[in-house]
Length: 134
Ligand SMILES: [Zn+2]
Ligand SMILES: [Zn+2]
Image 1: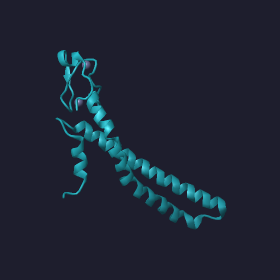
Image 2: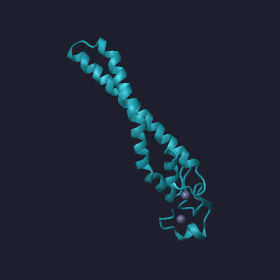
Image 3: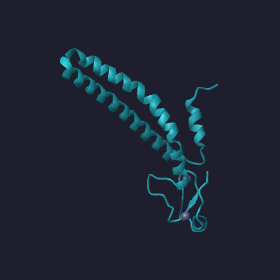
Image 4: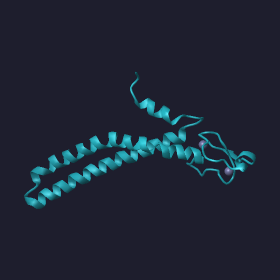
């Protein structure tokens, strides 16, 4: 938090505050709408690894399921090599588009949560909430 070098006018001539960490911000560092201050945006970037792991956990099982389901549905209609290739391609498309949908949803909800945050939340606190209580 606050690891980036703050410019002097952010301290002296602040025109706004970051909606998330409440750091004073000058006109030059004022975040555009749907953005937060540089330090918060970097927190968000730092969370990319957690998000990617979540995408793998949430996205891969339904993607594999969709692949298998399409394959099983279309396989009886596949005749010959061309048919088998077409079924495999359809299954691959179903799988990857399912994964892409989940990935987009993870990104969207992570971004929405990031923008909702207020005060000085610790990024680690969000990770802990995903784990079972011990
Ligand atoms: Zn500044
Ligand atoms: Zn901030």
